[in-house]
Length: 465
Ligand code: ARG
Image (tube, rainbow, N blue to C red):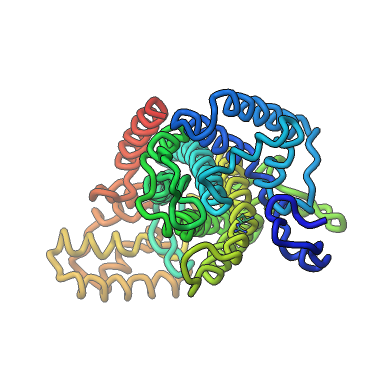
């Protein structure tokens, strides 16, 4: 038997391989809730416009509700022969209410249907991501406030550079993930237009009301151009782009956690909750969650790259290539959600080794810049000369195997006679971070102010929710 949805001009069954390559139900079954919501909106509009009768619309809505609960209770049998979610739902609706179910497909096509369903799905994903990111930012801000004064080494080139505070470091990720949120919000704004009613590609001759279905589905407006409505997947690409950038941000913190927890570094510790042991080496505590957050980035960027390549060069309007838009994207959204939640857990779990951080912050002559700045400020030396003098002092200390604050004053004076004992005050890591009061700098008082203002902002966002 040929396909009953479109089999009118077909007399033979598709080849098994044809069915295998064509079927999408394993993936698009995840769109069931959106598909049913869009069908209900469409049916109600058709009745309101006098295109189908009120009683047909009522039966269609009732049937669709039944299908929704069947799927949710795991009682629905998805049939591969019916290709996709749209035909599975419609076929079941026909079983439930008879041939009048066929009226639902008036003035629409699977092309505008799938575009609508996937927009709704991605919109739901964006809303979930927003909530997950809010929880992550709150965790980061809370820990930053707690550790606004905890001194740690700041790095450039992964070499000890200048002392910073752990709170300041965490707050950097608050800023990054806040921009991620902004990107997701932008994507949501552009996404939120309805393709429904574009039909196959050209619109329809029926007197439909696209504004009504758009409104019923929470879209801001219908899309202006029917060809565009069924052809573009830029809303998926844009969301995946934002997801990729977000994942890259998460991967950097994940990598830092991997580095910091290495026994070679030992700046922080994760509890048993976020580590695993080794089956052979009893002493091991592996930061698997951090490693996996780092790795999920590959899957997310892969999905973006994959879909960009699918879409590249596709002529208008719908092409079956576009059926490949969902699997990678859905997996990527799942991976991002997991990565954000795992990172939130780790941020809450992490315990810095404050003594180790403090010691490491002072290693590698991390306060050399403070010494140079003191020479500029107190002795009115040009910075370049101060840099040179400091370099010589560091070389002296390094030769003697001592830290800067351990080098006797006389040794410093042998290099620069005008140096006084007052210099000692700027050589400790505490005074170094305390002095970095420029806007956005690492001084504990800045970090506290930033963290508190973020707490207020997060609270406001939560209320607007
Ligand atoms: N399963 C299809 C997809 O995901 C639905 C649209 C099919 N349209 C068509 N004309 N065959 O893209």
